[in-house]
Image (cartoon, helix red, strand yellow):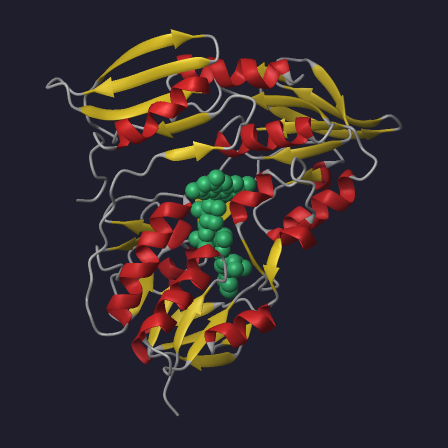
Length: 382
Ligand code: FAD
């Protein structure tokens, strides 16, 4: 029997690669292995579920059985791979060895946990897949007050969604603005003001240090000595690409699993894409790059080696109270910012010394200018 192409992960990266692969090759055995329940869903929808009134069931697009049929593939769910043996072209699921023709790592990134004292650490939710979301929705039923840790892109999206869903939201983060590192301060202020207009309360500067159960709910203690009461806590402090199994197998890792433009790891026949992959130095945790990678890798795996190219990759942030689109300037490129507009309508542009556009942050009505500006942006991987 021919060894299959094995894809580890059934998130957007794994399933989209399988779909692209099947467009080019109907017959090669294909095996998808996932630690979760294998339902197909669009992860970005996790931060719009309350506004759209969709629970985990409503966000699920297909059961794993239907995906297996559609892809002419085997889909093994609730199955965690525990090791890779590149020398023998096999991977391990506990004691079971599974041979592969080619192996693709699409195993994503995991949520970072913050160390917190107190007896209620288990009441801190992280939402990084459909099953997490189902657990949170069940816990949130009948509750009102949510404490959000983190004011990055995902924290702000959850805040907006929960506010639209009728929750009271407080946000805590040890930084001076929302989305630090991603957003110009003027655009960050517009987003923060938008969320505040819905009732969000920000505590920027301190960390959560202790979480205790009390008869009135959860009591959160912050590093500046202040205390907050809440019913639920969501941690959205960041994601870390999964690299441990790759490193243990001797593959080169850095922030993510290191791959070249053909998405090949440091070992032939092992590729990576999606949140776990660092593609020619870029680890982008967004949908557009992984879709581009899925198309290129499907070509490579079916005999047409195809390097991936990234054009500009602006990100549409789902904070409807303050529409936001952002394309941060490439790291290490010197540029100067100009800011126009005021209030919720900010146009912040970053240009290099020759006047070329490097990046932008647009909020409110300025978002309308994105298409024209995108034409000026540099490609991320030319
Ligand atoms: P994942 O979806 O995390 O899939 C990883 C898969 O690997 C899972 O099936 C998991 O079970 C499996 N796995 C992990 N370890 C193992 C193992 N050892 N063995 C077997 N299987 C394993 N991006 C945008 O571009 N726009 C947005 O608006 C946007 N909104 C977002 C909102 C939220 C709330 C979040 C969390 C992310 C958002 N993103 C957005 C990011 C985007 O969703 C991710 O970049 C993308 O979904 C990552 O897909 P992935 O397949 O690489 O990883």
